[in-house]
Image (cartoon, rainbow, N blue to C red):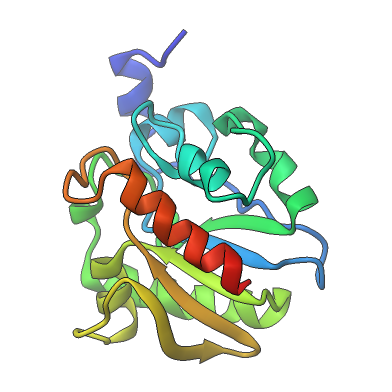
Length: 180
């Protein structure tokens, strides 16, 4: 049963824990912008129906089947992890301040330094630009590195991002998978 309107409102400002494999076993760390209220209510990353993260992850070849958000704990077995630039849940990413994104960028850089993935994949170019002061960043591989990790910016898989249909998002995920 999906969360009720009251469940969604009660999820505001919750934090969803990162999903990380043991240190040294992380190929790609995916970072969303921040969890939405649906994710906050369920406790699962990219949980809102209509979010294209899980379909794109599978269709691009990262997983052998499409995982349900409730199966996020299986990601470490694929060498994958999930975190967010900003941890608090909001109804929309535009409720975050630029300062929150910059602070989240520092925290994310430290997390990458500790867990040492091959790639950090940030899903959301506008948030990446703000968090790291890269106003001209585009979707795809970046010149930035954090420790040993190369950075790849992915399109935001939210269903609200209509300019990126699932096939285009999947193609960008597949480019990352081939590189990683």
